[in-house]
Length: 285
Image (cartoon, rainbow, N blue to C red; front, side, top):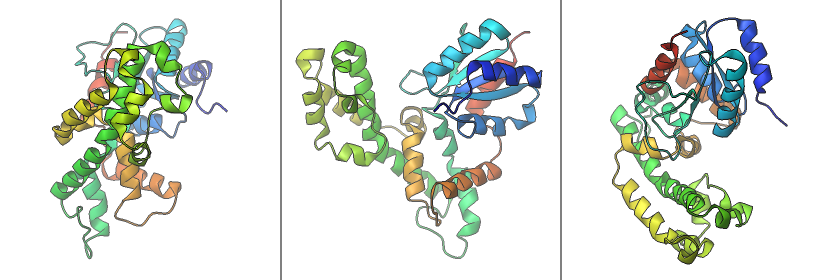
């Protein structure tokens, strides 16, 4: 069942509001990426409203469809960087689509200083290891990113395999085509390099996927936190954080409440995203 609005629904909502531009972002519902964007840019609500679409392909399609009815200066899209190279935008691309600097929106919800600000009042009497200062939280987050780095390397390798031989990749079982979303899923594969070589042998691609994976892990292993934020999905890291959060939690709603509190303590939009929105709003009428 579709939970995100169709382009026609977005057009109706935008025409009802009657002002500003609409920016299409990823997420199935209004409570995912669009909620954070609208919260971060609440003081510019007259200028911009964010609407969700389920995945970057649907964002691109929705922007194209809405531009045909609302005009190129009224509709834009912001999608996750994912596996793509970073682009320093001097202007909005002709298709109206911009990518974030960090890997996903969730990476922007992992600011160590903000998390320390949230946790500190709850731990004054009993400080938690790894959470007693901003420096400790940075180290904790670096550890989480490092733990997720092999997962990111695996998914990146699958992406390369798809690009090298789409037909061979599409012939694989659906479960073998899917990206993994938790380090335990990778552990269940056994030796990852051996698994990848068995998935698509070098003869099918002209490259050794096992070696490609190992090389990617080595690259990620040398990265600092600021670099890992750009190439390791924050979705993976945020999930581990929710599982190991130093304060007591019970269920999905409790974690949603934590993220709401995070935004309360740190309401300002991340600098990277502010630059993208400023660029969009600077477009001539």
